[in-house]
Amino acid sequence: MDIINPFSFLALILFQSIFTFIVSTIFNAIKKSFGRHFPTNFNSSDLFPFIFGIYIYQISLDKHSISFLPQVLLFWLIFGILFGIIYLLRFKEKSILRYYKLFWKMGIVYMFIAWIITIITYGYQIL
Image 1: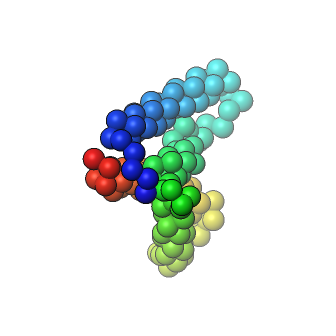
Image 2 (image 1 turned 120 degrees about the horizontal axis):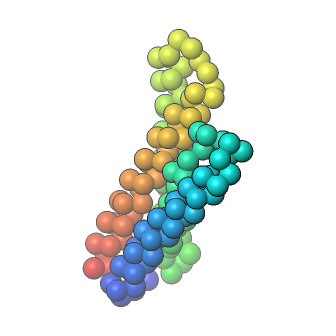
């Protein structure tokens, strides 16, 4: 990892947090202005896995253009396969749409936790 100064690292984290808030605010304003023409079950948090993926890439990118993001996505894929097997064995009604909704909601939490772990890991190295 390139050695960057702690101020740049903290500024990056602050920018990412503010950008997440701005995206959520704009999304909610658009959703409210379009009202009934907008899907009711689509929330601003549904965009977070994409946003946090970009954030993880930005934080963990080193001087050799290698990032921590492929490992994060690989674990998310393995988690999805295991969750799918458990879902098939556990639930009587096997709705693929319900599985995808649950998987995506858990992916939101997973990507947030991966972002926090990336901040802690790379922040510890920098600070």
